[in-house]
Image 1: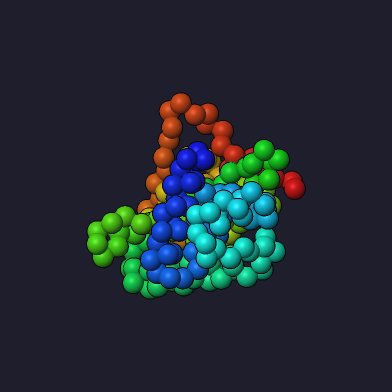
Image 2 (image 1 turned 90 degrees about the vertical axis):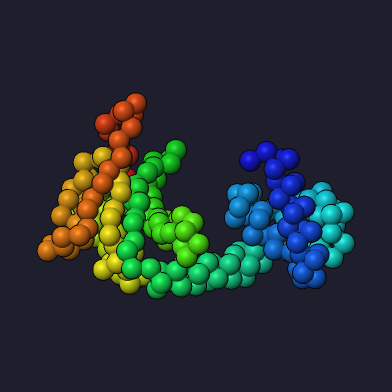
Length: 204
C-alpha cells in the first residue's frame, strides 16, 4: 500500500472520529487494514504527524496495542462473525494451505455469504500454523476442529480448494460420510505447476 493511500485512510478516519467526538480507531486502520508494524506508534515523527492531523489524538504504546487494543478488536470481530454465522444456513468455504519464505506452513479457512443487502461478504474465520505433514487426513482434522469450534460443520454447503492431491483427498467424501449436498470444488490455474505447497511437508 502506498504512503498516499495510507495518508488518505488516516485523514478519513480522523475526520470521522472528530465528527463522532470520540477517540479515533487508528489502530484498526493502521495495524489491521494497512498492515503496518505495531512499533510504528512509538515513532516520534509518526506521533507528531497524527497530532498535526488531530489535536485530540492520544498516543498509544505498542505494548497496549498487543495487550488490550488488538484483543478487544478481535473479540468484536469474532462477535460479528458469530452473529453472521447464526443467521446463515448454507456456508461456502475456501480452504488453503501455504508456506512462507521460511517454509512455515499455515492453514486458512474463509467462509463466504451474501448478506441481507445481497452483497457478497467473506470472513477469515481461522488462520493457524499447520505443523503436521500435509496429508489429506491431517487437513481434514484441522478443518473439522475449526468448524466444530464455530459450530458450523452442519451448515457447510460447499468447499472450494486448489487441486493439490492432499486437498482433494481431504474433502473427497465431504465432511460427513453420508452427506449428499456437500460438494467439493477446486480451482485450477493452467499456468501454475501441479505441485502445490499443500503437497509438501513442514517439519518446523
